Length: 531
Image (cartoon, rainbow, N blue to C red; front, side, top):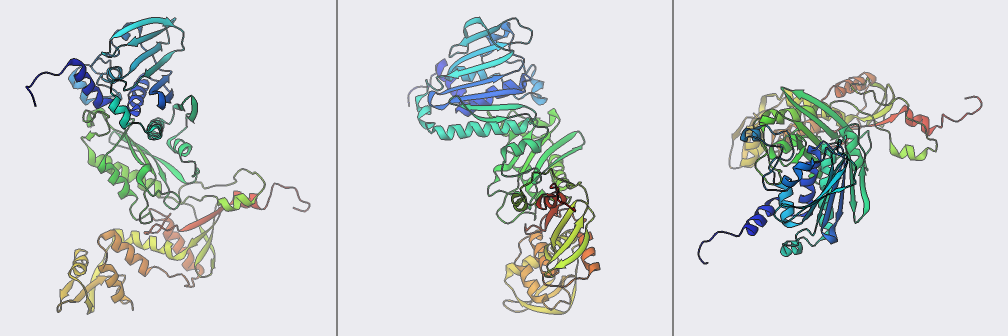
């Protein structure tokens, strides 16, 4: 292996830069961080993948002329003073390595102008991050950073990153994440000189998400804001009867303006959506957490994707509470099929007013659906799944097990018997595979299918599955005739549930038809004699 000897300075710089700049997307990340820290709210990213060239233009504060000689030197930054500042960071960048690492692996040029400067300055740097040329130039206030000949000194890296489509996807995904983190900013992306993405400033997180999720509309998502003990959360959630994904690509966590991977917070999101989505589906949920600076440790990962929180449990509780608030209320959505039938282009009439609406039962259709009226329209509610949701949430707060007289003899495996025991159901061995079940959930006692119900519960591995199975079995069956009073009582109980959108298995519960849709369909804007 040879004798131990120090590495050459150029090799050390390349190794250090490789930890920070490993792709064109990493260049974009470092430059956009700087733009946002400079107060920019209009950012354009340009990428020429075949030419290994990246450019980021912003309308931020720019560099003062006297700052430019230090701009690309190693560990030179205006964002961090004393070591104590690491524990109260309020900027995206702080290490002073971004521009330096870019200069090591590429040609770096900065064109910048402060709002008060009479002229702009164009600066060029060598691979050590030293300023080699500076001259006056014409430019608007802000900064344009151009990175060219990327990885020219690292041809092996170029070969590993040769898939230009994958590079473009990575840069596009990064711009999407910044746009979601800063919905009030304008972001543009151009590839090979052609504009690929233009996201105008949005009034809120939900509107920003809809710019990217164009298969959904404003009725599919809900935005929630919540604050507790100095911690704030803003989230946009897809209502589970309308929005879900096969992959968890739209379960996204942002902390203090940066996208992060955080297993416990992602698990908190899934807990908030528990028993609302169909099996195998993932929620649409964009979480923006604003936490006290001294609770967040960013100094753990070169790309700052990983973060350590001092108060993980309170943050998780806040996220779960916000999701619960977002799922709580009945929210009618216009039926797209009927809208396509109508030729007139009327604005919506009375839409959902939010909060709890007062549904009035009108009739029962096919002994399956309750036709109900609400201020702003009518809807069909499937009686079985509505009752299932009511029972499921009642079981969450009050799981009662009572003695069975006489006990039931069932053939169970040891695992099935253990499942029952873990949820308070008393079983006693009665032979090789026979067990005496001496107690049962109160909802099963006295039913003719009590034994079948207990066998079904024995197959469930956790409490939520067991509650879902029990509520499904004991809910009103479709095909059951209901009196007007029974229909109204069911609607009243269903409206008070925490999640009126889906049953515990993820099936939608209701289908609304708004007054606006009726007006469109019947062309009420037309003038007809006698109307």
